[in-house]
Image 1 (cartoon, helix red, strand yellow):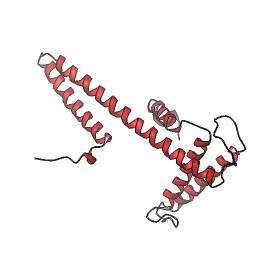
Image 2 (cartoon, rainbow, N blue to C red):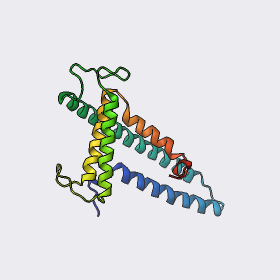
Image 3 (cartoon, helix red, strand yellow):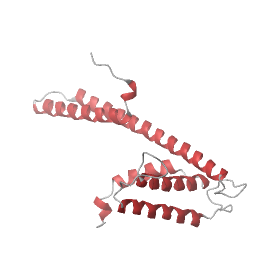
Image 4 (tube, rainbow, N blue to C red):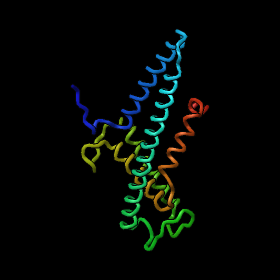
Length: 180
């Protein structure tokens, strides 16, 4: 008998299994319909699988939001402690409170330029600061750290916004209807 290690069960694997079950059940339903048989039980099963997939998706989304919020708070707190935000800064979504957001955005541009240089190097150059990673991975991490720091200072709901924008983009045309 094959045993399953619970740590091997990820939401992604469960989603793939649900999709495979849905496909098989749909084939059974098609065969039943072709033979003039009652397909109501298959339809009911398909509905239950769709509900399961929605619950799995919701659970993964909740974990993603929680992880982004946790790292945003962690990075932003570190950035305050290291002096990247003014003394006495209070996070606020609308007030500047002494932080130059233009500078923060320019620093993100700088990280993007460094990532471009890593791309020009073919993504293979090792990082000099974080062993075991490429320079490209380091620069992408720097960009993300700067972004979530700003998100923390402005109390942006970044995790939720990422999921909402991804859902919106899923319904857009190929390359969003553009050449590039």
